Length: 314
Ligand SMILES: C[S@@+](CC[C@H](N)C(=O)[O-])C[C@H]1O[C@@H](n2cnc3c(N)ncnc32)[C@H](O)[C@@H]1O
Image (tube, rainbow, N blue to C red; front, side, top):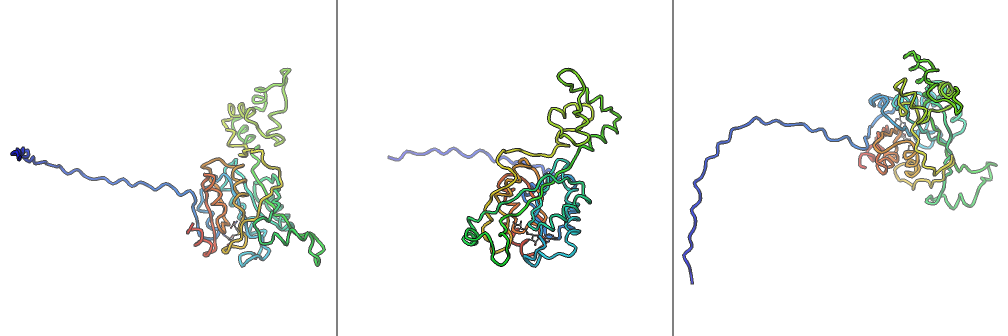
């Protein structure tokens, strides 16, 4: 059976008067990329990076041993020192620098040159004991330790020079500037028997590094913070100075890629998440990969167009 259906008439149409308001567009800057890639010569492009912003510099420069077309450099020691000098200006006061190399004679010259021309302080040489699990050379290197014709042993290592700053002079300079006596700071920490000790002067002369505890009176009197002075080092208690890492898998793109895991070890020990890492000889971007995997920011510089194109493809 059909019932008549009552349809309610629609309400009278209201006319909505819309007053046009001016429209404002707010430009929202996209967040900076975690890895920034710069194309060009390190010596030139380093000038575009803000001073004192980088926590860790990690470079694998040409070794000047003729590995590839980019690996023969005139006035090599002078050239590399000039770049290291620029890099040191980019580092935070508690930053670190790591330089890969494998040629001992050039390392010796480079170390003397860095000592003469930069404020960096040599801390340690890390030995990378190159493992070969993934390498096509594994069979060869496991089978031979000596090349007959050369009468010496096969090279199984590369070296990583580790530098920081010695900031003891900052404390001394600040104390003098503020006209504070050594005695005033010293008396804040007395010996068990209540006497003066040489703890503070040992810091000024660089004999001792400040600790979190000894930094308290220094901060109180001079305003300098622990992180302004003491190189950042997160002791993961996983290593001594000889590191075993497999070589990076063979690359069709580059002859000397570095293992990402080794770079992660450097980064995890000397930076915190969000810190900035700089590598001005990027190659395949292994340092960038290590930063992505550990939540650090990174600036890469690479001169060669071919490697740069590879880098930006990700
Ligand atoms: C030893 S390789 C680095 C390899 C890298 N560590 C990796 O894992 O792939 C050195 C790189 O520095 C680049 N290079 C050489 N001279 C340069 C310069 N003046 N400025 C920037 N990059 C440079 C080379 O093109 C090469 O890719």
